[in-house]
Amino acid sequence: MARAAALSTARKATRRIMLGNVPVGDGAPVSVQSMTTTKTANVDGTLQQIYALAAAGADIVRCTCNEVEAAEGLARIVPRSPVPIVADIHFHVEMALAALEAGVHGLRLNPGNLRKPAEIKLVASEARDRGVPIRIGVNAGSLHPEIAKRFGGATPEALVESARQELAYFAEVDFHDVKISVKASNVPLMIESYRLASETFDCPLHLGVTEAGPPPAGLLKATAGIATLLAEGIGDTIRYSLTADPVEEARAGRQLLEALGLRERKGLDLIACPSCGRAEIDVITVAKQAQEALEERKIPLQVAVMGCVVNGPGEAREADLGIAAGRHKGHLFIKGKIVRVVPEGEMVDALVAEAERIVAEGIEARMAAAEAGAEDESEADRRDLLRTQGSDANRSEEVVARIRRQLAGGKEASGDGT
Ligand code: SF4
Image (cartoon, rainbow, N blue to C red; front, side):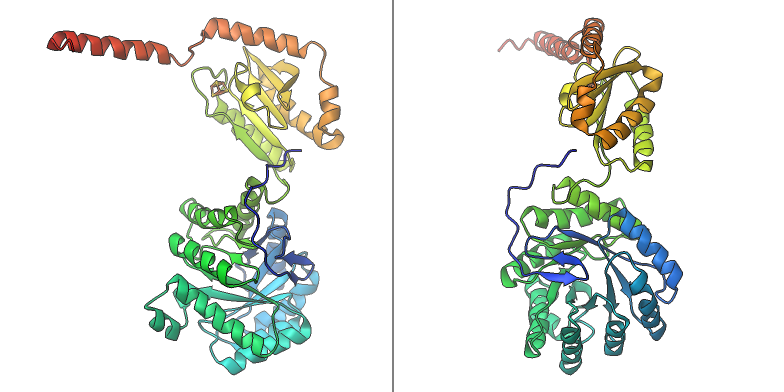
């Protein structure tokens, strides 16, 4: 099954922490996080969302712990959760202590609004005794006022200083089980802040563009920030902060890591040609039908839908499986090799059936089971298409010739013979 080539940049060395059974840092697979949007006191509703997030690719889920009822909810949620739970703490030290008592696997503290050193050290001591890691979650929008004043605003240096100060409080009570985030909604500021954090600390980094907003702009902003840093080897765990169903956050996180080759493919990767004058089918419709059917069956393959057999199987030879349109036929191929030719009306069904067989039997076995004569039939269809479409199906050369004629005519009319 397809696994993207790995990024050539080495991952930045960081220390390892454990969130429940999920390792973060020191070469562990980059993990995906998301956050519930339910009231944490609503135990069943929150658990339902946690299960949906885990199914969509979240390795770790954060829940707010903002009131007594939320802490009580956490006590009931944590034992039933399929993934480690992190409690999100703002302002209230007693909520951090209650969340620890509830058995959470991690805490997130915001140094911008939990500012008293004695309280910070109290939480760190309690977390140390329980073996629970803490994320120092610095946010450009809620930066410690003194630090913002000292640095003239939310600069990368100011964000990193806020984390450094918190880390120093933790060190005073011998607590080092830490990861750090320096989030901003401004993408360049976020990138620069994490670069500086990566140079400054050896703790694992939790990446995110905060308040990225609704998709698609939010997805693009978050991807711009997170992917840039991951490609530089920076980042150990990620969260998309979207104004959307959090399932979209988890899915996006997972898809990004798979696209960068940082996690094994768990879901479908559908590729499709952009279509052109050679296309023998409506590529957009067929790709959509295939995507829906394959996603419903949770097929973990890279599958290609290509508009023509002239170029399709060759262009998509890296895909695990694909279909390319011929003259009223569909050409099914595995790793670029034609294995079967089916009637046009059966293209999607044949693609889905073959995908299921690959998952059950493996790629090698399905290539070995290629129908005799399929390659020859496909080649004949391909030649037929080439003959009828010609070698310039997009009529580019015709247009070029027309432009040349026009220009030559213009020159003659203007008498410019140079
Ligand atoms: S040449 Fe064929 S496979 Fe390539 S874009 Fe055109 S229709 Fe799609």
